[in-house]
Figure (cartoon, one colour):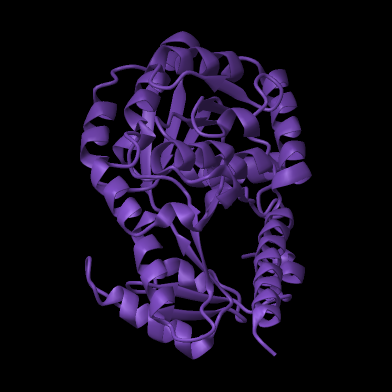
Length: 366
């Protein structure tokens, strides 16, 4: 969380708890946020009791569990705490595949009564999915859209752009497309690579920068080698300089088959990089088609290639879409706005708990 979000951050105390080990993102937490790692290995029944001990020690008023892998542990842990149980909130950020919640997960959700809990979703499409697949009532779901630090992601000056391109070995005449995300099936890098190859046949030299890593890397590298055209694909792995890489890009591509609200797309928009994205999740809400970016059907490399070629050959349109995209982020999706949404949500839960507590006291005999 950025220092820009501190006004919302300072209104409450935050503790981050990892069921397993603390990952690399733990180093980016503000100093005022305590990090607790339970170091549970694999899927284990130890998670809930260990989490319950952390809750009993710190006595939070709200426990916000992120995604399916933590939901049941959080619900059970809150039940194990004696006296002053916190409110369990289940946060939905998406699934690993585009096939929805499995039958097994739906049964577990029913067994533990998850539908009666409070839920948050990062987008409206996620809220609809919770209702359709897990039967969560609409009044139990709050949409808390994510945000990005717009002060970090800015358009590059001409000199910055040239310097970064030189460092990456990108020629001044090469058109650059960038994609950020794990190399997994749901991101559909296959469609993006095919689209860039087709685009290169139409407009000339195009380079695709693929940022991220994952189990499909070897297969995708083999696919890229078979393009046999003016397209080149560079697999850059996991990087900590996404803001710099965006400064050399002409277009950002998101070819996902399934998505909720993509932070990578928002970062590109904040950096004034025009986005071509598939019509999944809340992309069509975030990106206003032909005004702040381009929306195309999912699993359609031809449509992706057509949209890429249209932007790569039209610098004026790229500039107009990029500027409008940054305005869109500043208007609703800058990090302080997102932090304030979360802070107000937590405060509403605490106020609701206080009212419920007062009502219980009033009902007691004198």
